[in-house]
Image (cartoon, one colour):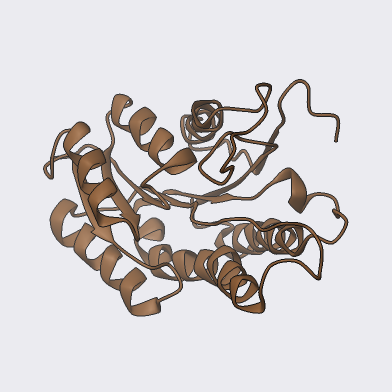
Length: 229
């Protein structure tokens, strides 16, 4: 099969799952990576089964697991055209909030995990002259009071530009997707009614990847209309 292949980390819910559905509609075969194996398998079944959507349990903070996910994807599908480093989560603001352990896992997931996704997928993306995407945030464009999460997304913003410069002249495009507030499982009590939906962000992702090869949309900052900052 020659259909292009789209790998997504953090694919089991939220932006990752929404992007998987949009990519499937656009004709991509999918590599769905996350820690939640049961939800991944349900999503893969929804999107056509393992001939079209390959679920892989993967902790993005583990190099061996990320490398193995890419190896399995290449063995199954023979190519990798798009890699979306999307896994991540947030924390309450305040440097006296949360636990140090929660901070550690968040920094490892949001920053180190994204870097490992770049490292694991870069050779295959060079081969296909493909597309690398990272989930940043509005919080990665301005400092937020007491927000270590914001600091991790500043790191992702810088990482995206660093990767773009390294990949310049290889044909690989790089995009950082920077959403404002999105109604995802992060919000245990639900996000405000005016928040973005995961599908809104997925459409932004698909806009970037659908551009002609000579067009590289480097950043997409997308806020809810009612978000003031």
